[in-house]
Image (cartoon, rainbow, N blue to C red; front, top):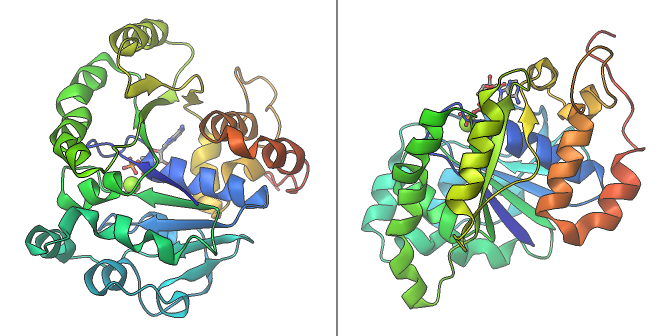
Length: 285
Ligand SMILES: Nc1ncnc2c1ncn2[C@@H]1O[C@H](COP(=O)(O)OP(=O)(O)O)[C@@H](O)[C@H]1O
Ligand SMILES: [Mg+2]
């Protein structure tokens, strides 16, 4: 089971959008995907309609080490896509983890309970520094950081999101490897001149950094992602082919490209099933 976490100390960067759409795409490619919503504002939990809501969620998983699927895992209407919903509205988990001896390693220690049933775990987090976010990082094989293509956001990245990773460096001495960080430009407007400049500057900044790199894929600013969220569908089903008169690749091409870049080990499935299996469902119909 691969573990991907969406990390950004900035709210509105696109963590939940990417978690939901990547999860939906991988499930449509035939992978068994589990979403874990660790944001106390449960946006990912309500992205897809649930077929069979379970009574519990992330609070019981983290607070009580509860891993029984029938109690904490809900099935979404997307085949192969399950979710552990966020039910820690008051943010108690942060305090609890701060005082627990296994604190930031708790999720990592719970992962073996899911490896037989899932190929992929995608963890969504809140847009702020917290113990829960640090716990998600330490459980991940890869951390994906969506970033708006703005110079100020790019500068803030080092202090905010990357600062979080730096503070976890001591865990390396305990034998806990920190995940590589991939920066993903989201809500890119190709008509803006400064976009290329920012991409170039980010690439240059991190070219000698062994832990941080910039994704080749960029996600355009597109209404398809908003429509997909309203319909409760993954964006690749909503915009499965390029819309006429719109520059740049459609949502299906972008999300498939991103999945291939992040998970080359699933190339076979991603190139053979995703493209053809889901029906083309346009929000206009
Ligand atoms: N590529 C995109 N194009 C258009 N709208 C987007 C895109 N990515 C995110 N959004 C919208 O931006 C808002 C914030 O995104 P969200 O994924 O909730 O951010 P986060 O989880 O990091 O706070 C949402 O309304 C979402 O639908
Ligand atoms: Mg979110």
